Image (cartoon, rainbow, N blue to C red; front, top):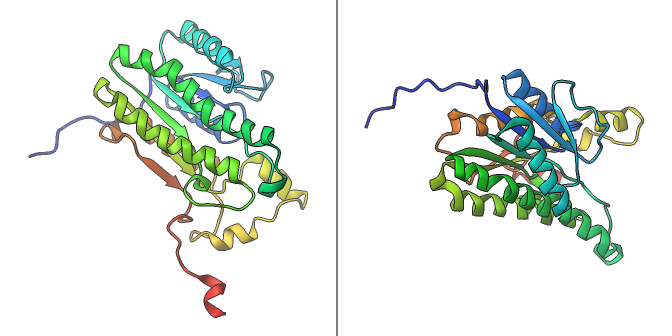
Length: 260
């Protein structure tokens, strides 16, 4: 069976992309990259005065609100006519607290934004993709959805849920031509993290030591993975979770513990 002679490319000319949480951080890098690749981009963000680029449509909305999601999706469809690619990036870390002292409201907010928000946006956009006969949805999870971390349980549980939701939607919509995949970023040096490090409020050294590649990721590196999964290069990829983490999840050495 020969390899099909097909002109695959990363050209998104004429394509429409919706990115949630796209006014800053990883989401901003994703939105800017798709624009550079020729797509028309709509950014959805809780902060209506966020830093979305002038060439992006900016729609204010809370992905955890069903009413907001319906309004946001309708506005995006009205502005762009269709949505070829949906990137569910909006998320929140929530408080780092011991289980016994964390308030239920804090747990619920992380679940509502990270997991329910991904579900609501996918439910609002996915069926329209099915009707058109194709599309791509990329959900942003986390390496903390692949491995446990103390006192970040709500975030980790929500991101693990995003990974399983990705698989479920991929299986449901695959024959309609809609691919659903997931990117699980490792520790990423956004501008916000960089400011904290500069102010002495965050020390990247332990993370860099633990990461086989010896550094934190860059937002554009996460964006590259998203663009790949949205492109024809990934035409036979669905239900997958791609860890973009410098080897973090692959690392199994005992390190200092081996010397005890």
